[in-house]
Length: 398
Image 1 (cartoon, rainbow, N blue to C red):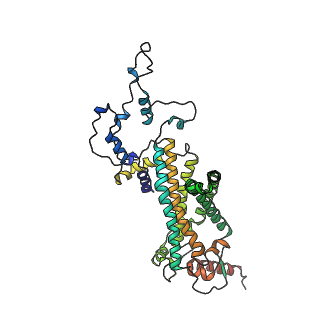
Image 2: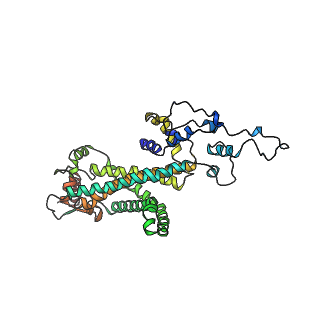
Image 3: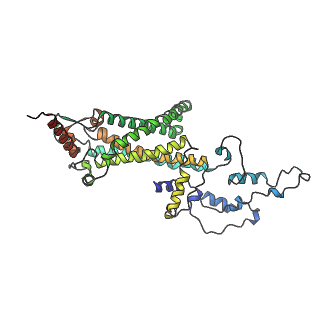
């Protein structure tokens, strides 16, 4: 996750994340201290330039003429000086209402966020989802549906209790709603408005925002419930190595033994918990940006650990305006969401058309013993042993 944070700043092309150069500063004497053509071209190439000549040259209020000698001059700082001070956050600004956010009058980080959102995020996020679907279609055509090898015995065993299935479906249903509404907001202007009209797109996005902000609470609650309900079954163990060695029985004809959750399901579980937790935290930061800023403290920790230096980058910024916090939270929220959506698409495939009998586990909760023996043989033996113990205890002694 630390590497992803650094990659995010590289994609946003923040000046502080760019490598420093040893090139001598250009001669600005002919321009009166203003930036040169070389400065402008370097900025367009995304290179870092020394802008201290702009930061420090903000006028001298003490050099203003006395009040009786002024002919329209209000002070020693001109309008360009004032806006330069605002641009570099060195102006003394006070506001009577609005809090810290109202003090930020000029903040150009939104342009980098917008370009990242419209460019790499939209492009690679879309490629990830469409590529995942395409690979699953290709896999299905080549492998087909994973069938139960032996004939069904007609006896079923309870795979998941009602409470487990309810928590799973609340988590799954809320995530699907969050995913679709998030995609509507991201791609609506480009792919919905041109075909269905701007009015329809505006109404859809307004509804999507309402659903997204409120269904998120159900997702977070279900995430906590699922974690405490299944975490002990998802601790890695030696049987997972066998599952990986035999490709989980998906490739080939072998069916490795597994407990209640096999290694593949454990990957899904921890992906949902860790990535879902990260999405939840960034979402809360977006809902409460002034109460829950995340990135300034995170960047401080990464700087102390020396992570940027290991990647050949300058230290990450630790003084962030509220707007910058929200821009970073939104970008991180979207990146992690795209990754988790791709994982969940694969999970849905295996749990529906990809594997015979898999849906029954979360549908009715009952699975045929032949299916359980093929995919979770160790778990089936444990269940039968408990049933035998319970039957023996219930039988009165002669």
